[in-house]
Length: 584
Image 1 (cartoon, one colour):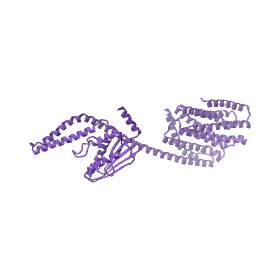
Image 2 (tube, rainbow, N blue to C red):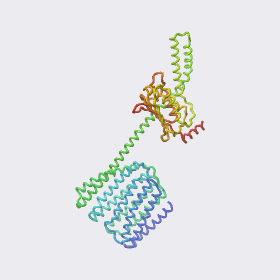
Image 3 (cartoon, rainbow, N blue to C red):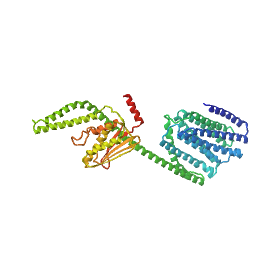
Image 4 (tube, rainbow, N blue to C red):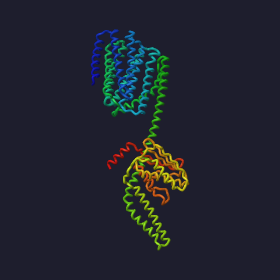
């Protein structure tokens, strides 16, 4: 407890003793009324200032909470100012009906809004929207109750006894509802917010009890300003001020709720639904069973219809937001499912490549030496003059098949290579241009080539030789597809997207027969002897080792599209490279 809180406790004790002494020793009159009204007015000014100071010292949801509390105390202050104006300035009794009664009734609405915000909980924006809409439904319904129950006997046709009794009951219900909301959020909160809520609850409970006694005395015509009934009223205001000072000291922030939060979270939408359903019931009662004067029944029917119209608009708007949120969630679900499938495919592909690499690395070297001997002996045998032409042709075929097997083993060794390579920032534009020139020049058909490479394309951290082989392999497949189609166009695009470099290789060939299998080892659609099915698998492995991604799909207008993504080289990548070199 800091100095300001201690000082205010002393002020509260002194003020309570003085009010008690004044109410018991001084007779009813102007002096007592002036003292009581001035005291309450000063307390309301102090309470409003403290709430405003809390609002200026906080942010986001917490600031909204204190702004609403400031608004509530500001309305309460306005009611007290009107009361004091009549009794102190005009020296007149409070008129009945009193215009300040409406303001007094409305002052609790911002308090309810503040509780509905639940500033102790970190709320998502979409949930905050729905909570706000539910609260607006309840506020409109509460104002409808005032217009439906109290207002007709207050202003349409004055009936003071009925109006006073209805107002007191509704005002009591309003205070009890606010206390119930405070209790629910207090049980769901923790830390500083829990203390603040419970102190607000205590001050509100004291005020509610004192207000009920005060209204009962007014109904019996035994109440006057400055009487004993004002003592709980003054003490409750002092308690509100002390709670504001406590909040300034604790500086509460949003955090997790306890397990009891579900009740408070689920109560608002259910109350809003009950409020909406009650409108036609009350309208039907006013139409068929209300025994009041025709003017009162008509007024109640108009109020019910107006409330149904306004609340219906809010319900439709809420449903629109719910549908929009549902579509957003569905799209996010589809996106996450696609990402999960891609991740699963990548994991399976990596396992295939890892298993194949382990197998190849252990056997390929053992096969190379016998294959070299077969190639050399078959060449020597085919050059023997003693062999017939048929035997020489058979020897050459043996050599050709052995040479093809040797190339396959070489591809396997390249595919299974696990030795770490030195990486440095690589400029991809030049590598792409060279790869395009190398592969399109060997083609025997007319191919139209278009390259669109951003001038400010960032560098990529990697091995220039390995990346060059990846581009050559992808472009080679595209050129082969275009040769099968009798020509066409090849488009190579390189651009930056955020922190990534995106490369697209697009052709107008016949497309891939099974695009989901193009990166599988030994999968090929080429004729026997024209491909091993390891080129794209090796390219896939290189891209993955460079922390990139590679995908393949058929375009809607024909042809295949390969998309390769690499993270752009930056300060983080440079730091990682430096750390790797330092530990090697």
